[in-house]
Amino acid sequence: MSQPPRSSAGGRHASLATRENPALRGAGFQDNCAICIRGLCQTFGEGELKKQVLFDNELDLARGEIVIMTGPSGSGKTTLLTLIGALRTVQQGSISIRGRELWGLSSSQLVDVRRNIGFIFQAHNLFTSLSALQNVRMALELKESDRAEMDRRAEEMLRAVGLGHRIHYKPQQLSGGQRQRVAIARALVHVPQIILADEPTAALDKQSGRDVVNLLKKFAKEQGTTILIVTHDNRILDVADRIVNMVDGRIISDVVVSESQAICEFLRRVPLFNGLLPDTLTKVADQMELVEYKPSEVIFRQGDAGDNFYLIRSGEAEVVFEDGGPGKVVATLDEGKFFGEMALETGEPRKATVRAKTDLTLCALDKEEYLAVKTASATFKEEISKVLFERQR
Ligand code: CMP
Image (spheres, rainbow, N blue to C red):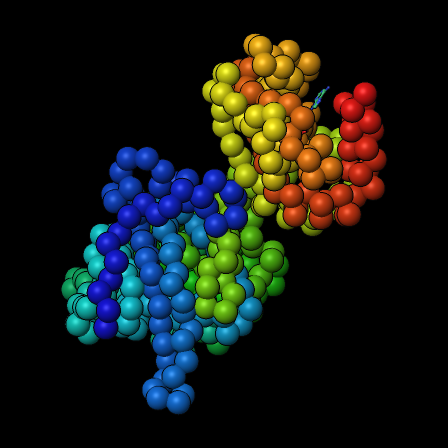
């Protein structure tokens, strides 16, 4: 086994795709990080049959955060989940759960870690011969010894998930949604620091699925529990603070839902992006990099090579023609206006310097995405041509 790398706050990624977790920015990273993964690789099989399933993964989950992990089947999601859940031994890399490193732990130490984790699976694994109350109470038997106290807490938890009137029912007397709620009550009853859920809503109708995620959300916010949900269920994506996408054993994107949604909302109000279909708009918002500047900071200089297109999210920018002297301000652009299109259109260097006039937040789009948006939207293309014509005069 190779040594785990030391934990760190990770590199700074400004773009919304594969970015630093904003819930963990700044001081208190170690205190606030519930799950911290670095350089995680995992291999199954031996010799000829040896197959690597996870490749150098990094992921940070804050306390109280809900993260959804998506990706095709076979992409390594469940393997990652079982490693975080201390259900397997970490072969290479580091997983730290609330500051405790899992790499190198013995089986009994892994059991100890599992005591602070609640598991919810698609097949809810309830004991069919036991009542709802008995199933939930089982989760307490590892920690508690007072039977009356265990009954009280199990009943309270069943009431919290809306099953107070079904506590003595056995699984086959309950609907699919009710069984899943028993499984959730069982996962939550010992107030775990972390909940790992594998397709918790897959077998449920729309309303039951919604009830289940609302319950999880309530728990995350009230108890500071970190929740990682592996799912293909698009109906529940909105519950997440972040969505992580895994393909072929690698986390390929890590998107802050609230930030991405906010940019999406903003783009919807900008006429330039009017012609884009909602799906494309979401994709563009995910690709956008938010960049902040202080007054008089330069975004780029006249003569620089151009690789980004900029849309002003807030604040004002000045376009300056340099002439060897102090320069001449030819335009002041504000919220919803854009610049930097000329160099991308012509392949020539920047025609002017652009600097911040006030505090300025920009959405930057790289050349490739800019060209893709132009292809996808006639409105975008027309608007750019119009502005380009005016600016070139
Ligand atoms: P680009 O040449 O890539 O970089 C400088 C940018 O300034 C240019 O694209 C335009 O977006 C913008 N620009 C150039 N001339 C004008 C102008 N007259 N009015 C407003 N913006 C301009």
